Image (cartoon, rainbow, N blue to C red; front, side, top):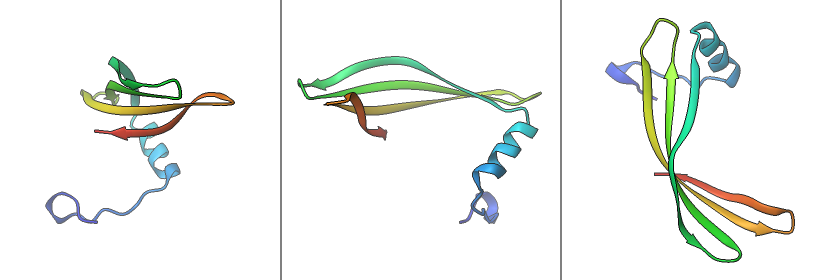
Length: 88
């Protein structure tokens, strides 16, 4: 995997990423900015969510990133469950 300026990126474990985030005082939050139903039947609902993820580090700038996510939910004997998430 090549990164910016030819820097080689290596896969990181969850523990390594968590340690880095904690050491940097990183806080991540996600807010639903808007939502709407794309389609609906008695057995399935497809919704579009507009999300804003905010990342802040101690002493650093706050970085907002916006995402659109399509969520498909299906009616099961156990209630409504998410069957798929697709970022757009």
